[in-house]
Amino acid sequence: MPGHPEASLRKPDAVTRLGGQTGVMEVEVRKLRQEEGEAFVRSVGVPFLSSATGDPDEVAENKDQVARIEVDRAWVASDDGRFVGNSCIYTMDLSLPASPDRECPVTGMAGVSAVGVHPTHRRKGLLSRMMAAMLDDARSRGEAVAGLIASESIIYGRFGFGHATDMAELTINSRESVFAVPAPHVDVQLLDRDEAAKVLPELYDRQRRTRAGEVSRNQEVWKEILADRPNRRHGGGGAFFAACDEGYVAYRAHDSNLLRGDLLSITVEELRGTTHEVEAALWRFVFDLDLVGQVTLKRRPVDEPIRWRLADPRQLRVADVEDRLYVRILDVPAALAARGYQSEGRLVFDLLPPSAVDGTPDPVCGRWVLEAGPTGASCRAAGAAEDADIRLVVTDLGSLYLGGFSASVLAAAGRIEELKPAGVAAADSLFSTRPAPLTGTGF
Ligand SMILES: CC(C)(COP(=O)(O)OP(=O)(O)OC[C@H]1O[C@@H](n2cnc3c(N)ncnc32)[C@H](O)[C@@H]1OP(=O)(O)O)[C@@H](O)C(=O)NCCC(=O)NCCS
Image (cartoon, rainbow, N blue to C red):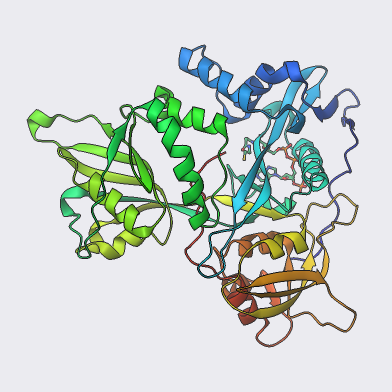
């Protein structure tokens, strides 16, 4: 069970300064200014070892990135006027576990992104200072949760972000994709980009309310997806978009020598139906494409139901499972009351701060009472006579929140302490959700 490690963050002011150990370096962490968008995007590339080439696609993409920045939610670390660190928040909402027979509710989420510190300035606390500023900003706007996709899983637990969703990549040879359980037929239409721009966003918004973990996409995100720039195609051709009334699929082909008898391979970038039946019908559409052998299914849920439709399920291989969304709970009562619950239950829990704390009390810490059921939930501070069932760090509450991981597994790993008999079982039954959460959209 993790304890309360020592404080390691300082409370940020509107402008904070770090006196360097040499006494020479002074780095300011501050908000981005309106005119600094391009410099911000250039700075974001440096920590990821992505150097500007001037390639027209890169220039166009950078322009899109500048347009996407919410200037009031972007921070830079500036050393004598030169950017040496960067981070930003995208304002979005997150689909939460649903109550039985309901669509997923949503809650506002601070989508933390573009985090980086230049190699010249690492391990001097700049990320810690930017993170403190971002979490303060999110709290001040009333966002109950923050979320991010991590480049390395070791970085963000200390700030209270818990690994909350996984994402799978699957492969199958379409010639081995006979269904044992037939899919319904749906009429599918191929769309050009302008048509896709009119149809896909609305379908996406309905579909993302069927699975927890999905995030909203604004116009800028759609513009980026539909632009389908060559540098985002991973060696494939341009994307095809096809839609039916209740879903759509985006796929691209990879070259091969057909005359030598090789078949094309297909990458399915995205496939979304508002029901499982529609998704199965769209899979059938893809698997029945002529000239195609290998199909790679990207960004799929770990409980992908298509496996159970196949006559020969072993043909569907799991190529990869990646950790995806990390969730930071910022407001415990609001976050827990916002999601749906499958069953009735009550849980009293002690919540501890993450290891990186800035010396001021984190409002999530304390003893909480969650009373929840299929018709609603409430969460409040516990009274003096209410003993806790379990004790955990806020990082691990982030892992439980979307139902992607169970309390019993976290307890088995020593991350949750059971204080009363059946405390962990109560947490298991309250937080579990179906279907498994997925975050199909990167940010
Ligand atoms: C990850 C990154 C932003 C960290 O920035 P930083 O300013 O060096 O981080 P800080 O100095 O605030 O570190 C805070 C703590 O996290 C630890 N830490 C930070 N990055 C770490 C990493 N990649 N691996 C292990 N520990 C790390 C630090 O050692 C420090 O620990 P301490 O408090 O016990 O001393 C920086 O290394 C970076 O830009 N990496 C490449 C790009 C990247 O991966 N960005 C994240 C995208 S999601």
